[in-house]
Length: 500
Image 1: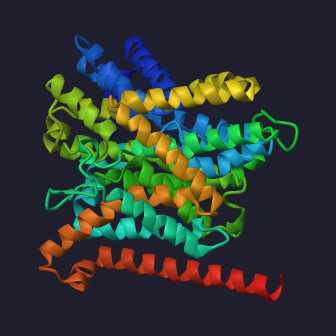
Image 2: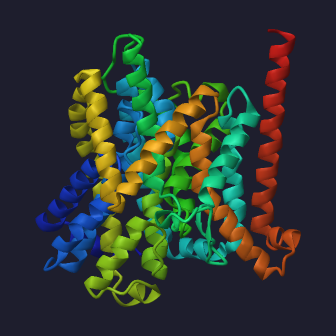
Image 3: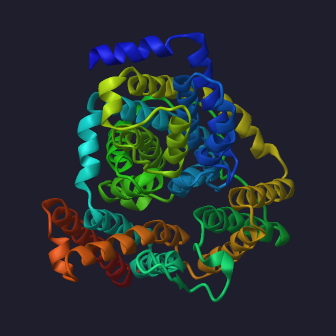
């Protein structure tokens, strides 16, 4: 293993590969910062330019884009309450609140350091345990995926904040939205009402941009019309956090990184699921769970370390099994095939220098990411000085452009605006839109894998759920989490009734 790592280092340690990685990180970060233009689109735009490049250098550059893209989405999530990527959605909860409290530097640099920590942790885990981690991916069948998604969906209870049942209602609404489109088993359209553009269901990008970006911009525009303005509660601090503040986040970063690697290994789960579950677990095990969603730095550290840790984990099924676990790794698989590199176990046996060169390039990409992040943060902070009406107009234009670029359909722009109006309605009734997004993210995984598991078990629900030790453990943890969240929510309501 050491010889393979050294061989990979000798391949990377030249000006050409290093510059390619650096360019990829910058390009990916820029793509992640623009709402709707995520790492996948940034990689797809670069793919034609890899023709004629050395195959390994081309993959290194795309790996840099992958790392930069996952981090870049956190910058608009913190500064304007709009996630640049799907995986940055969980960062909005506390990152945007920290910004509104004037702790912009703490939020931005926590995001950067946590992303680099998660990325480096995932890379080291990849170098040391690529083949064993591939076994983890193979251990997950349909019912294990269902149990994992069920564990993640228990987060809706805690997202209800003052009313647990509103969180559950929002989660069910998200799951309902995820059922629009083709039935994953029968293959027939559902809830499309004859609209051809709905046959594939709602895409994540227009839904996320609508619920987060459009809703927030509508709210701020309404405030301006009412004579209000968006003002920070105190003098804004853009400085780098003290070491003592970052040190407190190390346990959260470690937990998020581990979850990111493990969930990233599972094909189909990805960085978005990893960030939500990491945020949920950080809140669940915190001594101050009520501080989450109100500007707790751990609410930024947990999802950011997880979504960047997932980049390393996602490379395991791609390189060791030839299975892309996300849209971004599917682009990388295409690049590998274009350059006649066939992923799979034989890649590690015949040409180990290729996968280990990619592993080493991920390590350098995360080092470069720290310095690229510092540069982009300095630039992005200037966004806060733009007049609010102009900023609202620019953001809405960027969001709608990004949504159109993602799908090349005018219909998607209408979907984003519709979800923006839905977000306003949810806000009026105190229903957490974050729980709607979580339900939508996990809804397809829940339904499709439960139905596959039932087919395997001949319709026996309990036979499917308790078919393995792993699925049994996950479902029991999920049930316990629901009971605990309901108990805590009911106790909080009772205490307020007794002591108003």
